[in-house]
Amino acid sequence: MAETRLRMAVPKGALFPGTIEILSRAGVETGALADPGRQLIIDTADMRFIICKPTDIPAYIAYGAADVGIAGADVLAEAALDVAELADLYFGACKFVVAEREGATEDVESSYRRLGVIRVATKYPRITEAHFAAKGIQVELVKLHGNIELAPLVGLADRVVDITATGTTLRENGLRIVEDVMDSSARFVANPVAMRIDAERVTEIARRLQDAALADGGGVLA
Image (cartoon, rainbow, N blue to C red; front, side, top):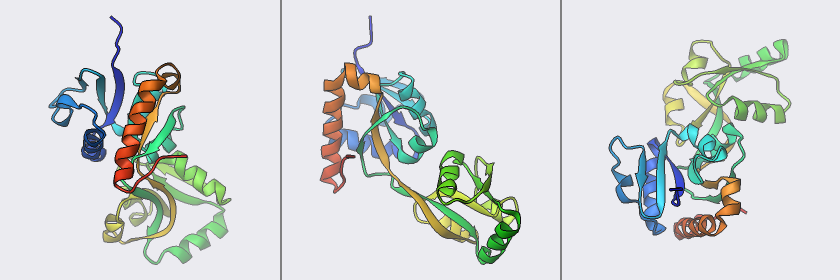
């Protein structure tokens, strides 16, 4: 029998509690989703929740394994896959920043004038490259998977592009923010095909999530 539930990808980790909260406030039955144990798929009468690593959610939605989902704007921008952003849910707020060692600006700028390139460490090469390209700055990217703030401290990179909520970790490691790159928050997104063939249900859940976000002073994407 064909699956008739709307399939929603939800993120593990930092966005998970906010996801449960906004779904509940939007009147979406979540069943055992709040306490799934080791289960990765939770079914209710109307929904099939697929619990995913946050960075995988754009792929699940773009390739049709899920109809809709909740993902950070940062993850969506880095993946650059074909998904439709329907609402900004206004939780999980953070931002991308460029940071360097305290007092390193003169050295970094001198090195750039001499070599014509800045070495930048990041987990987000697509976002980083686009940011510096828009400024006309040539960069050599070093992709790392953790402890980004370490790179300038040991001479691996001149600067880093990282995501932060408060900047505390950067400051505690002797780094300072030199510019902002982009803001990020949780977004409700959909597979473009699902939007066409199941428009009523996708639109309805988008509206309900929008109303829940607006109740907290948030909004919906234009």
